[in-house]
Picture 1 (cartoon, rainbow, N blue to C red):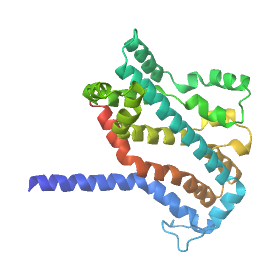
Picture 2 (spheres, helix red, strand yellow):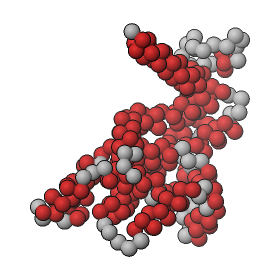
Picture 3 (spheres, rainbow, N blue to C red):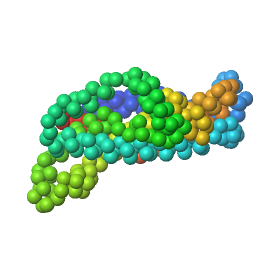
Length: 273
């Protein structure tokens, strides 16, 4: 009986916390469907009387949001694929190859996680400018193709896979690359899914780097786009919220679809160090 009560209390607390966390997003969605006069009405409304689509139409006219979404999708997808490839290959080397200084090199990789991105952003910008990559997809994609966190996550997951698979594949005549592609990667789907969702969302939400390396609207990403919309329509809260909702939906869908893989990958990777 006491156990049932405790479980009920936990569920109630979780529902309350979920409601608190989701309320701003839900309220933003409601505001996006309200007319301007309804937003400033007192007492304030939470649910619109009628669904008003004018905010979405005006948002699309004010700034090229669809172009921003397309740019962010291209960049985020390319970075996600790149991080999966580079992290998997590097983690494979750190897990299954023995070479001099392996642990020291891996420690150096991890130490870069303690360096804030702002400390290297000017040097990275000067490098991109010297290569004449400003206002190109290369400037948005290539600097983000590899991260120490991705290598760490994949290595930790690879360590949970028994070495017997590697030895059995070698006995069957499989090369190291065949083992990597046909055995290791299929077994690592939770970690790959986790890294994919993390990489996609982090790239989608980038603001400072795209702001530095892009000047033309044709190359801007969604986070800069919403700032442009806010500056252009500072008093039109319904219009701004409509833009926010259009930008949030792709990342929210990606998180919902990959939530299970994200949790499984992070949990499994934490089991062995």
